[in-house]
Image 1 (cartoon, rainbow, N blue to C red):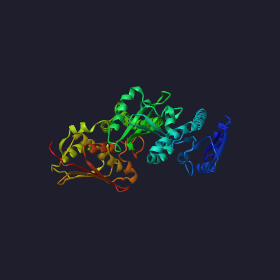
Image 2 (cartoon, rainbow, N blue to C red):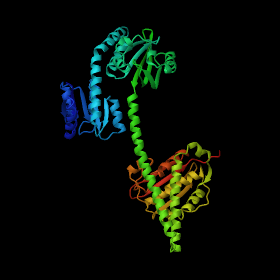
Image 3 (cartoon, helix red, strand yellow):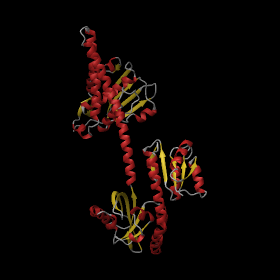
Image 4 (cartoon, rainbow, N blue to C red):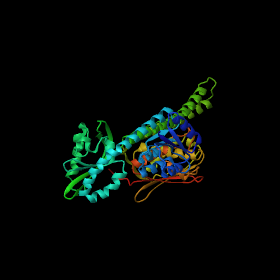
Length: 503
């Protein structure tokens, strides 16, 4: 009877899994922790399959999987988790866990995975005797090339990657145990002694053989080749994707080429699934944030327009409705500008750049913002100057950059604080410093300030696009941005523009 070990620090989950599996005739053992499971295995207790939670107090399920991998035990480990993420998925792949299942666990799914794990384990056990034949062939090569095989022995016995060696005639002369499993050959003689061409599909043969020939033509002992996403052919005519590293060397006057082959099919499937899940979650957050911004503005516009349209509406109400409509329209325009900036390339921005006057461009932006609700009650501290401070940039892009900084400063001061603007020029650069006496930012916020859609504002009061767009613009135009900020002490943004040179 197959014996299954269930490892979980939650008793209810252990009992639930035991109930499901015992009904199928399996012998079930329980462990409260990964360390207990390791102790039992180290003491000589054997199991057919282990089902383990990932997140547990003390050692994790990943630690247990690492232990099994390091001990090279033929023991399938099925990991379950209530919080799947890219980091844990990568660890699962690295330590060759058999399967990675999200909670809540579906009964049909767990039974199917356990059945498949048992089949593969039993197949590996039954193939062990057949694989011993390959060791006899390796022994013949070891006799002639003792030094080489001493170096390769540890790798060949420990790795789950296929390691195949060919000679200068493209004949396979050696392969480790993982090679026969990966390519599904029944006996070593089905692979060893054959041409390396049997590992490639016909439509890819010419491409990959040309790359192999390149290695063969290079100087011995110095040539290496890395191939990614190579389509390889199994003995049953099925295909899989693999990464291959090939090196060449000489022994006793003969040249050999060894390739290390790693099956990446499952890794790519899991990564694509995780990326798809993260993308859907990301788009949901973006849609909610931008939708709230738009709806808030439209609600304000609609409400004031309806009040101003009434027969008894006075001039003051109509003026207020007009100002609200203009302010909300400007807010929507800024949001649209930020969204459009996300699709602009460095090339398109630079093609429209020219030498501008920093003081003049700032005055133009402030003129637009003068009557907006955001800045209307802020104190803008700036000394007007007719001094020419040249810098090379696109005028629209600068307006978008400065607008985002000013709007953030207004929000930080609750629209009633002081915003100071300073410009100057030294021998090398033009400088713009914008300071505010607002709330300031913590080190944690500064670390995330450039992340798209990251915002400390309430939902519907910010999209998190402003500083992301600023970062895009400063990178595009090679502007250096230095930020100083701390909670309760305001923020300072120092833009250092490259020296303006004529094209």
